[in-house]
Amino acid sequence: MSIFVLEHLPIAVFAGVSVILSTIIFGASYVLSILNPDTEKLSTYECGFEPYEDARNAIDIRFYLVAILFIIFDLETIYIYPWAVNLSHISSIGFWSIVDFLVELCLGFVYAWKVGALEWE
Figure 1 (cartoon, rainbow, N blue to C red):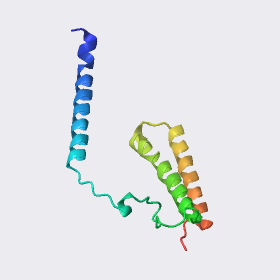
Figure 2: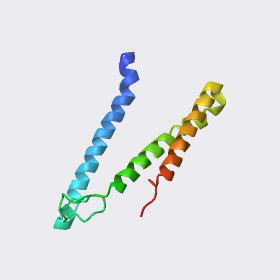
Figure 3: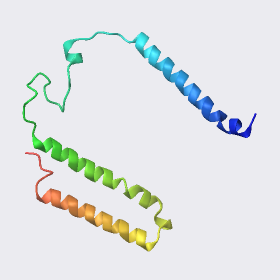
Figure 4: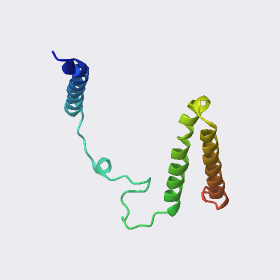
């Protein structure tokens, strides 16, 4: 066998096993599942609202505001983890840039708090 085949054989075996296993799991779940559909199970679920209302009802903007704020602050705090792991290996420029990032993140949080975006009435 060539060196190329020997190097890529574990990847091919892994891909083959994963395709076979996923086919078995999918087939077993289809064969063993109990198909008992009713109107409530087949209905659309949206945002905790009753799905039988008119689709043109106004949805409170606070849901979107809270979702956007969660995405902003949650995703931006993910950047802190690699910085904390490599803190002993970064230069002073890296340290001060993350300090600047944290200050801006805290200022954004304080601003959202002050304008009442986090209050639910």
